[in-house]
Amino acid sequence: MTVAWVLGSAGLLGAALCRALRADGTELFFPDQRLSWGQPERLEQQIAAAVAAFGLKAQAAQGWEIHWAAGVGTMGSPAEALAPETQALRLLLDGLQRHAGLMGAPGAISFASSAGAIYAGCTDDVITEQSSPAPTTPYATEKLRQEKLLHDFVAAQVSISVLVARISTLYGAGQATSKKQGLLGHMARSIIRNRPIQIYVPFDTMRDYIDADDAAVAIMGMLRSRGSATALRTRIIASENPTTIAEIFSIFKRLARRTPLVVRSANRLSQLYSQRVQFRSLQRAEFVRPAGKQLAVGISQLMRAEQMAFIQSPDRSGQGH
Image 1 (tube, rainbow, N blue to C red):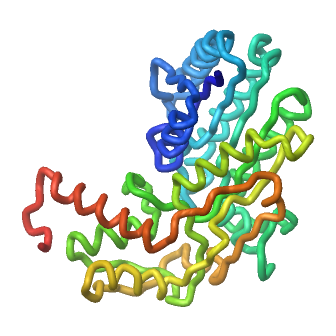
Image 2 (image 1 turned 90 degrees about the horizontal axis):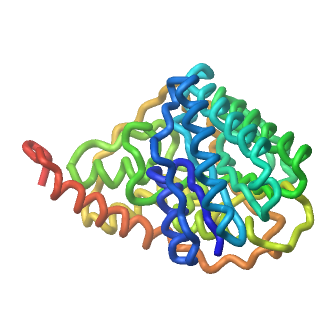
């Protein structure tokens, strides 16, 4: 049996990873305390204690996994807001290196990175693992810095397998509204509440949307794949079916049976995103992925989830329907 620790288990991807791991029969580990990102000294103590506790769990298992899906940063975050995430990752890797039991047991780490951010300035028609990173924001630069920490970790501890998963645009029910990201979730909430949908990019803007559960299954499969002998692998995880904003509106319009209200404007991030993005992994033979969820099906599920959240909201006064 494998024991797994998902950092960021309450988030969109982290929760999906927990579901996929449970379905696979993997035992999940949860630290006693939530990590205090904004308190460096307390954070260091918490991570040290969590690594020690995880090590005890791993002793009775056949192998261990750590899935990093943590972080509160977005494309609009300033550099100073992102530094605690990098420090937390550094503390985690340092703690693992010092833990002889974990270093001596079969282990693997997945790290959720951002393909959209890292390749934001890339001009390739189709972006693959061979494309050069082209960051345009502090968020992307910090993600590359975090990836470098993993490269250094592997160089010192080659017995641990590491997957850097550069993921396209995630969507799914339960995405945090406080992070001000997630176009599909924003659209679903706005339609259910009869509010205008704010759009900051042209309607022919193309994105690759992947359901969080599909991404989680792909991460698990690639991490556990024996198709590559390298200790660290960087892979693009995407639906590989790019869709324009106009096409997405058409899906929402059909599902809602009315034309959504739209407000078009620009903000400081509008020019930082590539207008047309198409991802393709060159390593698909490494892991045979099951057929992903069709976008229309995913949006329909997202609409139902937002409808339920609206019905259960304690204050629905003046909220449309």
